[in-house]
Image 1 (cartoon, rainbow, N blue to C red):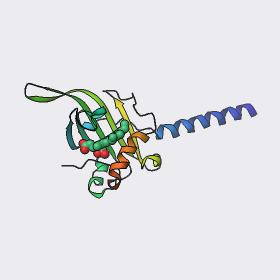
Image 2: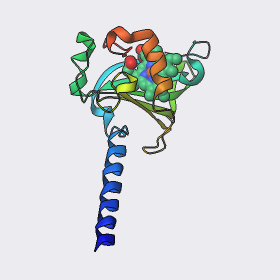
Image 3: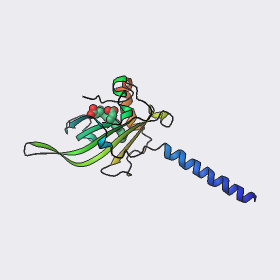
Image 4: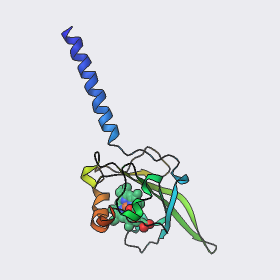
Length: 159
Ligand code: HEC
């Protein structure tokens, strides 16, 4: 009886831990291309951030995030996506190549208190589960914090 009770407690503990971990993970933002388009930009090879951001990127935000661009304070549940493609120049045109990565910021002050209330994640290429961030977002946040603290760590402004 005692053993059984211990086993139940062990299983419950594992479930609670698994849930806590899942909540601290940034979800892949399904269908973000149908959200609000914030801006697009091309970074050439001689741009300071060319490694790793060279290429064509588009930025999207969900509805919850929209007010934040003017308030400089983003509501809980805001999600902003940085969708980056290789760029191919030729024939008088600059065109999108394969997707390089999809960067995501999710506002959840409780779960991501160490990185300004934002969860940072990158998904490699077209993958929805191959994660690129292994330091809890510290590297991403360091740059956002150093440069755009006053706009709640967000660079882009809608045009
Ligand atoms: C060296 C600086 C730097 C680092 C490191 C960095 N970013 Fe950014 N990030 C930027 C800049 C600059 C922009 C604005 C791009 C624009 O204006 O189009 C940006 C924009 C973004 C955006 C759109 C929201 C915004 O702030 O405009 C997201 C999402 C994003 N980055 C995610 C990430 C993730 C995830 C990482 C880590 C894997 C990361 N960033 C690392 C400089 C950085």
